[in-house]
Length: 172
Image (tube, rainbow, N blue to C red; front, side, top):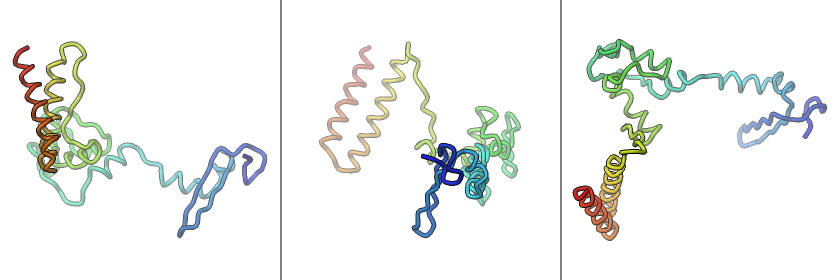
């Protein structure tokens, strides 16, 4: 497909603009797209980094208290990193920052990852017990969900599976 503007080069950029339900498509080469006002406007509105993303996700209009550290400024007592630095870099200074900034981090972490708890990976060698514990925890969670749904057949099956796994752990 040739560029709509110059009709010389191959179209590599495809812009779609929808205004009031009306769809408008443009197929431009890279040079014409770079000079297009629509492309420049879109590019400037999308020019943000991870710090900007995290600032939007983690900042809130009201101040939230922190656990430990300076409550007003949100400074980690261990490494001295302020919460504002985390917002700009997207990185925490130390392991204690999680506890210090817990109230500010928990909701966004749940939104992004589905949980605020770090699950991590189990080692390939010697990680059998850790994997078994994770499986039991997962099954217990499924059991609770089945009971809440009043799906007692599934709940009974899960209960028996958990019991078997726990018995196998004791025997080993």
